[in-house]
Image (cartoon, rainbow, N blue to C red):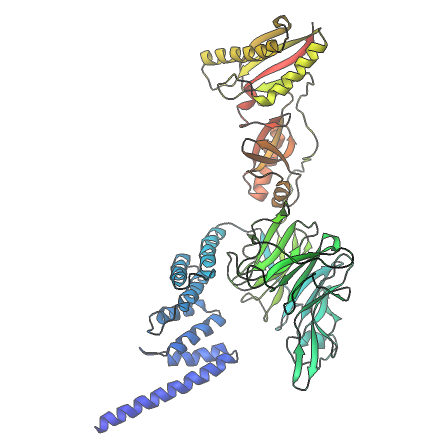
Length: 609
């Protein structure tokens, strides 16, 4: 009995000690001392029956320490615990995704989806796993860099370029003191505006007493745009009001906007006549959505949601419109991404924004990535991130750069080109093995018929050709049939056969013949008016045009000889990896193939007998 008594006392003492360690660990964790807390939690979870809360807290500490390998091991234990909650499958999936175990992560997300079918995050994370696996196979043309002279252990946010100078906001007391200013405010969320020039930081706008915390300074088109929070000093401390946008010191409020909701993250576009912003007002697609409002010279119009191509059930923030108003950069946690907030880009088309494209690593990371702005579009700019281990503090400003293509041989893609031009020589081209006249060439023939009817001294020579793939017997018949088809077309229109001289030609392999033009095809899509998109894909280095082709549109650059366009295609593929190749056209008609099509033809030429 005595031995049993001492054994029970020992168990109670050990339990009390573990309970005390757990309480101390929780206190350290709540203070942000994750490394110290994890040491104590590691002790409390030893054994076969750890407390469920200690396991989940330990996993949280490891995540905050960015030790995702240890976090994964703890989640394996959490999912075996009798008190396990279904939400832990989602967290386990997050850790597996970060550790690159995409298939296992998808298994956990699917389990979570079964338990919470209405939560969009499960499907979004599954798509993210599939997307990241593909993104990792493609080499990026972007690089990012740290800015040691600018960032502190506080938050540096909202970069903005004005007159070539970087403006940003920060709640750093160190930067204030470095500029000879001491703040009387205690609230760490009070921001001031700084400028970064010649590798040094200077104060631009300071939060004065009973004034405003300056969250962002985003001037554009000669207008001063500020995002502020009013500060009210009370006996118990400072109180900050919700964010407020002002344009030239006038409060920005869209017409009919409901009261009590935030309006933040401003960006002017359209020569200062349109404001893009973020709001949590009712009627959106998720938490915060991107909207825009237009200025008529007196007031701002009702807010217009950017649409469900941009906005999701998650949060969309930090809109940024490029100077030519065609690209929208923004951050979201609702589209497939690496984790938390990622940066996306969308192009406007026919008044609607296209499906967003993830900017991929290293622009994006497993942390929060947002607030992208350009310094020199499209080559370099700035973004904000709390990525580990590069961030000094909470959020830092990083630079990004796009690899500049090496120009091997400059090509004038807009100069008209006609090889060995003969203005009197016209063509009709045929499908393989066919002598049927395609509708697009009948207009050419009709113009010749009109001239022959007007001037009776004009006659027509018709010479036909075939490509090298058919047998000699087949091609001999084919060139005769093609001569007959054209001659019959003219005769049916009232032109006497005595004025038509038809000559069956031969089998040929020439690719460069008079009046044909070669180009480089960049892409083929079913939509028209996509020239701007393909110019963007080639960093706006080439003028892009298009041909209608069957059920879609061929987008191309260049007008020149075969050899010049072959060189241009190699250049484009080397620098942009677009799968570009040479195509050939005649009078705005693009051929199905480049190699054989020029030789499936008849040549038509007027002459004076």
